[in-house]
Length: 181
Image (cartoon, rainbow, N blue to C red; front, side):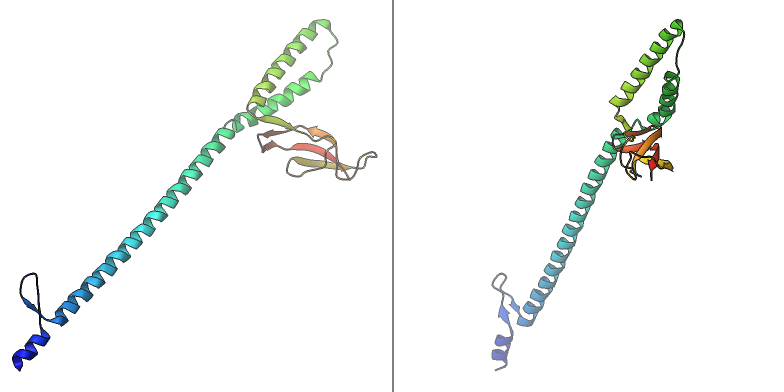
């Protein structure tokens, strides 16, 4: 009978012909199952980490592309800011009246230089902020004073004291204006 009990507690291994205990087989199976679950969990963690790294890289690439585009779009901003006072001085100089015929050639030359400078700035995306007769917009206009003038509605620009400029869609200098109350 002891031999029969031994037979029920052991199983013959077909691959090498040895006897194995069913509890050992179950234990090995459980260990393999646990090991498999660990490997699957590690795989899932690595895959999730890889997806995050890929998303971070995509965000970095988009952000870098946007920064390059902004740099290209506004590369001439500092030069424009330096040249705006030059434009103001040209405009003031060109507003003076010339009484002598000999000075008229000089004024015409100044106008040509002014137009050439303005043309170069326009190619870079510089434009004048329209103000006269427009509704006051604090994003592009700077109110220097308020007046009461007939013929204008409330909150309308009556006069431009200093021209404002934009570079593409960015205000370089707001227009300084008088606004009707």
